[in-house]
Image 1 (spheres, rainbow, N blue to C red):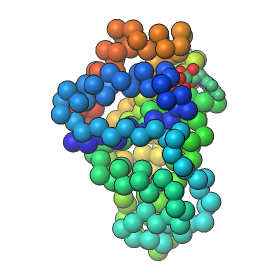
Image 2 (image 1 turned 180 degrees about the horizontal axis):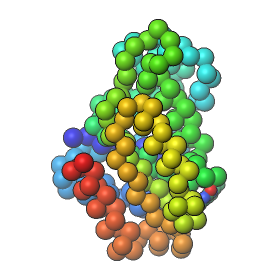
Image 3 (image 1 turned 135 degrees about the horizontal axis):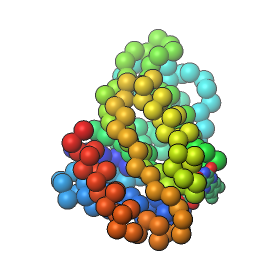
Image 4 (image 1 turned 90 degrees about the vertical axis):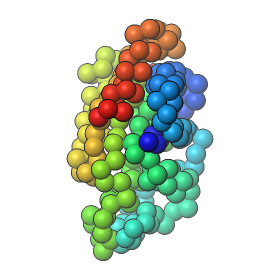
Length: 189
Ligand SMILES: Cc1cc2nc3c(=O)[nH]c(=O)nc-3n(C[C@H](O)[C@H](O)[C@H](O)COP(=O)(O)O)c2cc1C
């Protein structure tokens, strides 16, 4: 099994990265191949809404040449992808939002193209946020659940922890055990 973790925080060693560490440890303990991609040091252009990708069958088909080609290839080769992100303005940082928009070419719904590049794959969320989980993270989770419904992905749930004391909030036994448990649940789902 391969899991692709797409890390959306601009702080590569910040809170979200801290919460993801025990999650990765647990996956690797269970012989899962983990691909860890930090979006902040990738070149991801914004979607231009040109719909060119919708006329291509069997390939991503985006006309822009940037790191999305590599990201898409890693997702295609994975069984599951995890959106690991801090909540920014009730959603996610711009680099992750750019990637989500650029997922448009994964489905071929609006042109001559047919099929899907990712149908049936598992998608999960790991989030950190300043507000409590319901108020802070629910809008993002709702958006991703709808993306999964729309794209025939298998939504596998969200694990999120509140930032109450910067990195220390994610180093507690509870936060670490929660991340490990989430990894185990993902493997059995
Ligand atoms: C620009 C910015 C916007 C934020 N917006 C929200 C928000 O809308 N809701 C929330 O609960 N927390 C928000 N936060 C808090 C972060 O989600 C939280 O501190 C998170 O743990 C940061 O993770 P990181 O260190 O991985 O970047 C925001 C933080 C920043 C810097």
